[in-house]
Image 1 (cartoon, one colour):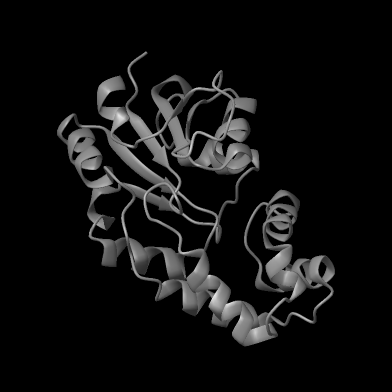
Image 2 (image 1 turned 120 degrees about the horizontal axis):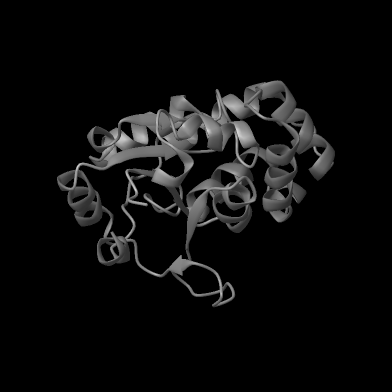
Length: 208
């Protein structure tokens, strides 16, 4: 069936995520060689899998348990403010691909596991906010919970939608587990070849 809605992850799919920028913030807050920096991905994955939507209190609690640090909710606020100011750099081929899909009258959507307060300004500063019909943030739904995928397809049938993102669990395994098509954006070719994946975002132009 023809794909009519394309549901994109944001970080490391549409916009580059500057880990060094984030790391400088974490070091300013907790010092060098802190356990939060060392275990950050594990902490995030634990939090995302545990809660279907964002809560600053629960996020702080999860980070505290995961890192052994005393993480307060006001730290989460400062983190969000820091991410909001991250320089917006598009992943290669994003602009031309969004142009192409819009010209084909496709519905474009963002589904991201960060909050409206930082993600909307980043999309606007990057100059791509206007492409999207809907932007779903973790204020309302959070991957890999089913409600995130079910909500983001909107009025379209499951067969008319496809998810695109760089995270194996959240953007590929998650939607496929619930019956949706998905493409893994694997620009460094680190995942098995048998997965449905692309190395460049503009490969979508060749497929659709």
